Every structure is written in C-alpha cells, then in structure tokens.
Length: 305
Image (tube, rainbow, N blue to C red; front, side, top):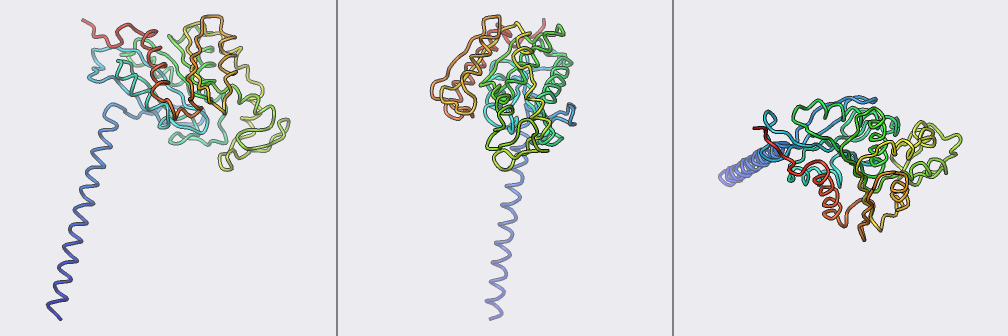
C-alpha cells in the first residue's frame, strides 16, 4: 500500500510539473504575441477634455522615423465603439501596407481612455480629435495628414475638418464611412438605441441597449449641433462610403453630406454591407485606402536623399 501511494504521489507530481511547464510555455507565448502585436503599433498618451486618450500609432513596414517621411491618417471610431473594433484595425493595417501611417485612439469615456461614457459629447470628441491632430503635426516624419471617421466618428471627423479649415489648417483628405448625423434626429425625437426620453427635458442619463449610459449633456448639445454647416467649411477632397444594408444610419445622411459640400465629394455605395462593416470589410477598406493613396501621395513612403 505504501508503494502504491508513493507511486500515486509521484505521478501527481509529474502531472503537476507538466501542468506548470505548459502554463510557463503559454505565458511565454502570450508575452511573445503581445510584443509582436505592438511591435509596429505603439501606445502613447494624448489628453482630451476627459483625460488621457489610449492611442496607437501604426507605421509602415521598415519605416525609419529619423530619415523617412510619410502621410498619416487619424482614424476615429463610432459611439460605444473602440480603436480595436472593426473597421479601425483593418484600416490601420491596410494603410501601413501602402506606406501610410495612422493614429487610432479611443475617444474619452470609451474603453481604455480615461473618462466616463455618460460625460461624452460630440463637442468633447471634436476636442479629442483636435488633440490628435496637434500630436500628428508634432511628429517630424509626417508629411500630410488625412482624417477618417466611422458612424459618429464620421460626424466628428467632418466637423473637425471644417474647424481646422476655418483655422487655415485644412486636412489633406477626408473619408467618412456611414457618417452618423442621424444622432441629431435621434436626440431631437427622444429615441436613441432603445432609450426613450423627453427631448426637451432629458434625465441625467438614459441607457442605450439597456446598459450604455448616454448623458443629458450629450442629448441637449447634439440637438443644437451645426453638423453640416461646420463640415462644409472644409473644401478638400472627400470620399463617403456607405453600405446599402445599413439599418442604423440611413443612406440619406451620406447623401446630405455630398449635397452640402461644394467640392466634388464622391459617395461609394457598398452593396450588401451593414453599418458595422462585418460583411464586406475588405471592400470598404479598399475604397478608403485607395482614396488616401491617391490624395495623400503618389509614392507614400519617401526617403530624403
């Protein structure tokens, strides 16, 4: 019996050692993957009205910050979304392959950035975007800067471009993917992502989808936004991309932007695509990236002689 118990203990110890070795290997693999993921996407901190903004700068392959120059695109996600959610990561990766750097970030109150969702407003997100613009301008290797926004990020990008143009700092190109100007109608009508409220006197906050808090300040300030009036101050190249099956932001929003811009603003309709860009991601990304390649540079990556 003693021999049998000893054998059982030895076998248990052996299993424990194997388990420990497996966990160590998994831990090392996790560290390796983490370093691999952030090898070309490094996180910095820029500050907006709600505090620090989690961000990633993605550079082209084999890029030398000391000798090379390239364009950069600032990528802006939608409401309740993140820099790590479709289509932002795919855009950053595709731009890098074409020799174009990018900044993606979480707006204040979203995901890894400081602040609270309840205190988010479009105006504060515009301030976040302007902070990112200033950061991009400070990078010595950046030759030109473009803006891209998806959903509410499209509204923010369009208004930011207009504000910058009014200051004489016009972006080199602007792309809007299903720009969510419908948020204004939602706030004025008292219905926003499942939440119902009195638009004239909204509560301190409402819960969208039953969990996401949208503050009174957001509702009231969005009602009074001059979205198109601000946006049309930008007179540079614009590309709009909208899915034909988008049931969240109607096509009329993109059509209204085309109507308001005095320059030739091109609207590309992606057949069968929805608002979340989950059906034809490659097509949407391709349309956006080709636009920036054409507008920002003929040969994106340049090395001074």
